[in-house]
Structure formats: C-alpha cells, structure tokens
Image (cartoon, rainbow, N blue to C red; front, side, top):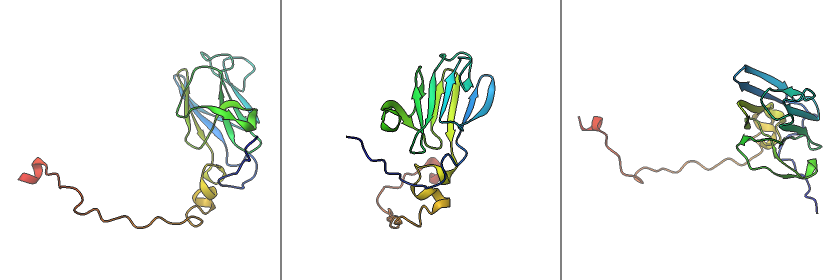
Length: 158
C-alpha cells in the first residue's frame, strides 16, 4: 500500500524558490543550483558537484515528483535526520530537505536553501503565503509570577 502524498503547504510553480546548496570547506565556499531532477555530488569526473576527497558518487539530490528535494547518501556523512525510505524515489533511504537542512560530506558542509514561499515544509507557504492568517493563534502566555523562587545573585545583595 502506498501512502498518498499530502503537501503541507505551498502550491508554487514546480522547482520555484531558487533551490540550492550553500557549500563550504577548506577550499572556500560557493553555491550549487538544484536546477535538474538529479544532482550528484562526489569526486568522479561526471558528477554535477565535483569535490576532491569524496567518494566517486558520495550523495545525490533528487527532485522528486512531489517537488521535494531528497538527499540520498552513498558515502559516509553527518546529517541531522535519520534517512528513511522515500516512496517518491523508489523507496531509497533518504531525507526530504527543508530550508536550513545541513549535512557534512568529508570536510565539506552543505546547507539546503529554498525561498520560503516554495518550501513545502512551511505551512501555507510561510509568512509570504499566509502562514499565521490560516492557522489558529496560540492563547496568551500564562502569568508565571510566583511559580518559581527568585534566584538572588551576588549583585542583588549589595
């Protein structure tokens, strides 16, 4: 049984929002535009993002049919999320990237960015798309006065 994909947010145009990776490492920094359905990262001469010192094919970024960008690893990495099977890319283990997602390959750090209005992880397309006007606001913050003892510092004694 396949799960039905339910977007949490935007209905912006396919691939919009300037999806890209900010890359920094020992040789400097730069950007990799995610303007293809598959961007490969590694040390091989035929990858779109070539970095010496990585595996020949170290990682891939798939632009899936749901307009999501999915990180798939083939070499060692540090990531902030556990990779799980992603149905939209044939159940390969991966991570759907959201703005600010960070991963490290070798000595190189990568940060995924996409304009807020097009990032599917933000409800209602973020602030520009109406986030907050579509959702219920939280109730006012409770009054915590008297709930905790006052901690005195040395400066208070003088």
